[in-house]
Length: 129
Image (cartoon, rainbow, N blue to C red; front, side, top):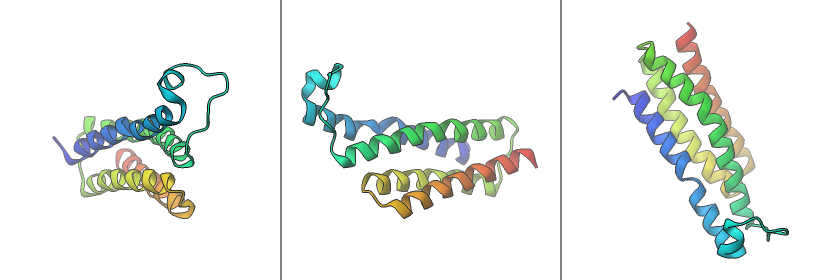
């Protein structure tokens, strides 16, 4: 497996597991019945859980772009140092984004997001160049 596909797998796994902490908070705050149901006036989640949920949504939205680019590059047999570094950096940027978003650190959140976007641009450049 190429490094690019390996980091895509790690990124997908990270994104797929992000929901667990904020769902546990949902159960703790609202109780199991309301957590799995559709309460009329649900109790608000802890602020960190609300931010983590937003970070998860953002990760899902960006995984679509990242995965498409990695898979296109793989199908075209484009495996360069730039694509490998971009994929590794993207994974770590998404992990940092999750953590700083959850802990409410605004400037670092934006920086981590921007690094991820730059990684996507690098992949697109390698494909389209």
